[in-house]
Image (cartoon, rainbow, N blue to C red; front, side, top):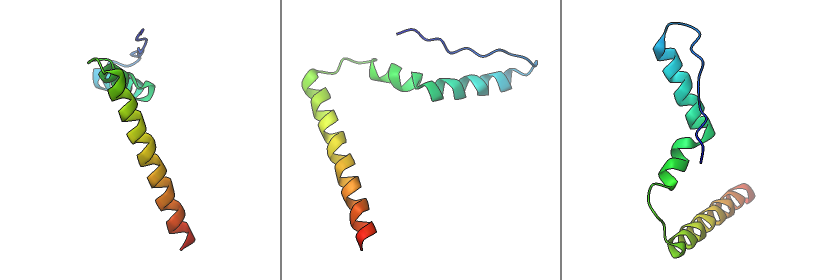
Length: 70
């Protein structure tokens, strides 16, 4: 998992460069990916998490459809 986020500092302000770097890392999802692989997740836990995520998404869509209908 290579990490290739870098920012060119064109001005002398390190704070601007740091802000740009943080935005770039956030946009690329590197923090989320690093957290994901920090600890081992058992295959059963991964399936359970994915199933719960799909269920929440389905319920959210169902509630949205109900609100639109009346």
